[in-house]
Image 1 (cartoon, rainbow, N blue to C red):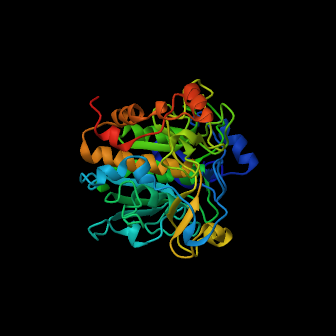
Image 2 (cartoon, helix red, strand yellow):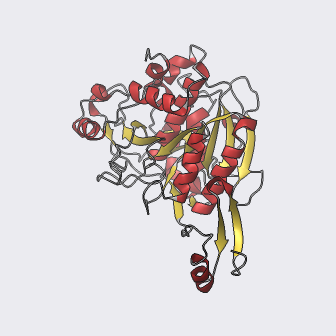
Image 3 (cartoon, rainbow, N blue to C red):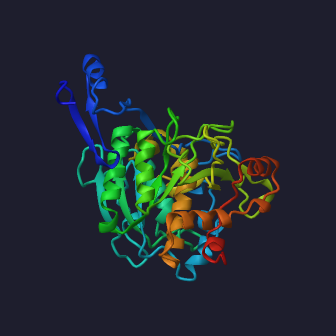
Length: 392
């Protein structure tokens, strides 16, 4: 790159590559070099949570009375909390827009600090902010230690530790180079910080086969390193073959979103959210691997975040914001993976995926849309309690 006059911007050792700025003439020369195997454009990537209405009901109310689902109870995580299974000792790395230092995120239920590391892959520095709010929202769904009005924890794994990695800007946009640098940092530091789970609540349109995509190559390196990688299916559904990257990687856990139609006690009207991307992948793999609550999910967000300022009708003016997306569903599964690893820390990423898929409950739904989609895709609603107490 330097020989042809280009400027290296990112060292991407995880995939034996660099990111660089090149003129058109420099690029033509570079492609002819024998030492260069492939050249990829630095494509854009977007987070997959939006403040939009989902399939069931209306999110038109505002303030503290915004309707939302108590996701930990719905997925069986609350029952595990009463048994002392709360994610303690397991570290989740969230690659997103950063995280706000709210006590529900910064401290566990014992009031102990639990943000063990931060990294900004955009600026290549070890401090993180979140001007957008998406990363904070996703992080809180996975591990918030705040207690809600019903006396339960707001997060799936409220005692888990956190590594916050920023790869997306204050508009929720990222690039391949920044995302791959973030993944490189996570893999390089997984043993230092005990990272067992990595949450990837973002997606982009696949531009090549899954094994050829440079971001996917980094994701597969994380999986080979022993990290449970949980990724969004994407928000471009409901048509078939709309699974995004890196959710199209067959080895990792890919999560779609469902909605309870604002009736969490009634499973008969549960449906797949219309935005949730569907499989199969181009290569013929069944995706998503499971679905989780992703409609009208309440999470923590600072009132000064751009999402909260642009969509005040979804913010209570204090700490909470309602958002829908496969991002939120992905965070649910990341938290459940942490619960499972606390209970059985010897499990490999493949064993965790098997246990989670085995816990999914397709038979519990009688809603026509969701039943049909499950039969087509093989994905049921993940259940934390069954995953931990499985006899498999």
